[in-house]
Image (tube, rainbow, N blue to C red; front, side, top):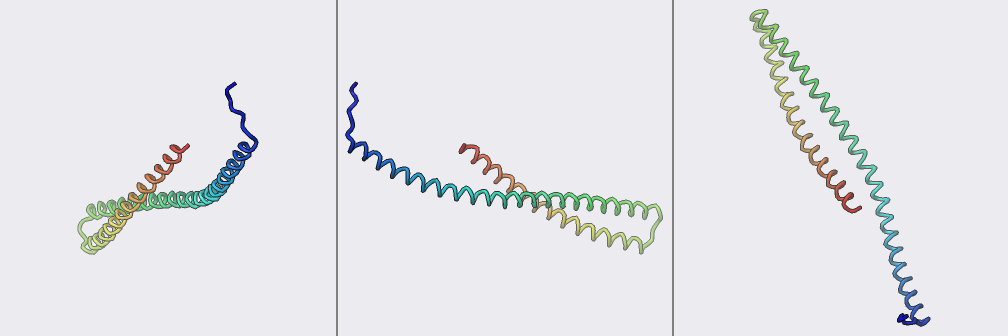
Length: 137
């Protein structure tokens, strides 16, 4: 047995160093626990934001369907007009309706582009957060 016998003084010095290290670990742990609690709170907010994003997607889907229905109705009105013959007042009414439909179509296209960009950004960032968390475990 070649192991050196430690003195009581040496062992007590080790214990004091270890106690100091343990105190630092407890400070770290308390800090991490506060951060963890804050992260859970933020996660709750994030979950609500993701839910709201889902509602916005559902609203957008409804708007697309309504726009499609408006387009079908306008197309049907044009077909009926063509079968009835020419009536200048009806043609003006259809032209006005067409202009309004064109403006709504542009607004819907702009909204779709904004939602598309927002959705891609949100999904990309959530994927990055998930990947970072998985890599850390």
